[in-house]
Length: 270
Image 1 (cartoon, helix red, strand yellow):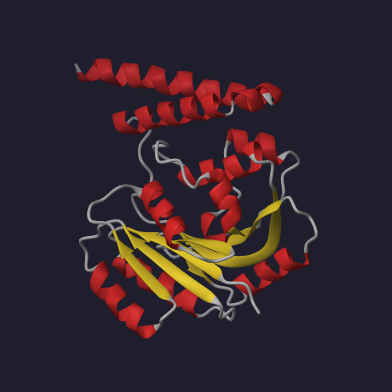
Image 2 (cartoon, one colour):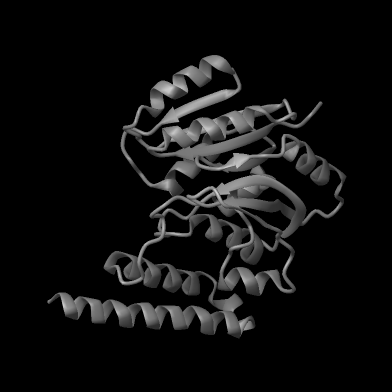
């Protein structure tokens, strides 16, 4: 019998995108799915739309937070309520464009004899706010540990399939990380738990960029988050950074630069 795959989706006030996301999941040829949607207290009618979808397909499980607790907390809620052997991640504003996405990834896991294989991901089609499309083919970097210590940018959340047991080993998502929680999860899997990643050349997912999503680097809140994120990453993986000094220098540069710009911004506001 096919192993159950949990598709974990977190959402907050994106009901117009969520329907596209769900439709793409329901189009998968791999039938043995459970779809766990965690609503982080949306106010845009998400609950009404989800009522329709839960009646449409019994595989969909809908959970709504009573108050907004952040994306990392919502992702952990999905983890604690899913039961699949495998877990696929899905952002509410993305869509799977390959109906065989899950089937292909499950087959790779089942055929692979490497016990340290922890993540299978793929390439993506990036669609900007003007509808312009770009194919981004992702490949395994020469040194994945060094790369993920510096940044992510190659493991796209909505393309990932992993094992629930691995997520439990990592203890889910870091709720104290102010941004980049997906990258932090992948970092923990790769650096701390030493799992490997397989990059599929297939383009399985449409990744949408929305107008106004980028925050100016002169924003006080952004600078503080940037400082906090990089300082926390250095602290959590300090021993690994000693083995990869270039990655450490990069993170330290971001810490010092963001703190310096924050101080200048703060003084200008006084």
